[in-house]
Length: 307
Image 1 (cartoon, one colour):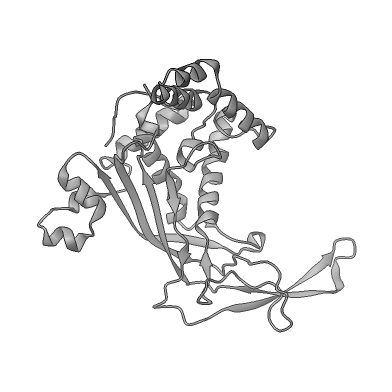
Image 2 (cartoon, one colour):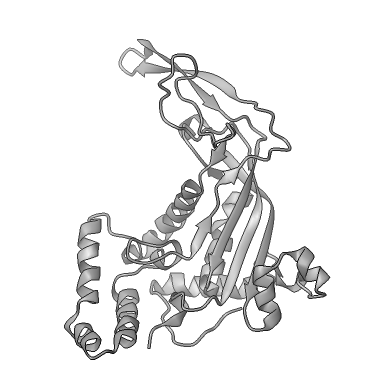
């Protein structure tokens, strides 16, 4: 029987985190070198409306790298081996999928049983803690982060242009002809933040809440030129919402906004989560993640155990 906790056969719960990413210092998410005659050498990334944005993929990669480096310190096997190329991993996955016992099950018309057994083998032998959360080429991730768009109510097209120059490290002087300028978004600019984790296990919720603590303290840097002190952001006004599907009202919470729920006289305040580690259910989530981190193994059970 497949381990349903790590599949998408049903939507069992959704953990949503929203807030504002506020630039504590100037911020630069670059779009590469400009090729126009008039303009800055290194402009910032803009959306179709000409406003700055931070790609969700960049935020997700930063969050994954932040967690993965710490997990690797305790359990190197739970982070992808740098010497294992993607081609090698694909060969391992293909070997699991085409195992003789599974081929025989498919030949006998037991495709569902073969797929379930393949899922079990994949999770036990190939996938890491990071894979089942953030995804891998052979496994769909359950976490998504939207592009962080600028708060248009406070944005009036303000950019800063700064100068840079390449230095000769032998003479400690500026290299002739290597002066350039680069564009940044000024400190105080606010961007939207939205993270969604579906079919979340308790340890994954705890992992995310802990990983976002440095974000709320303004200790995280995003974008380029970070060695120059750019890119510090803080996650402010964060709201945490966890919905577990166990009733008809829970299904409505998944698909309706709060105004609709109010009109239907369905309570929804009880799904808000306090990220304080001393509060329930956050405390149980933290403890679950600590247990996983201490063991270094992916929890594989056949029973649902959710907050």
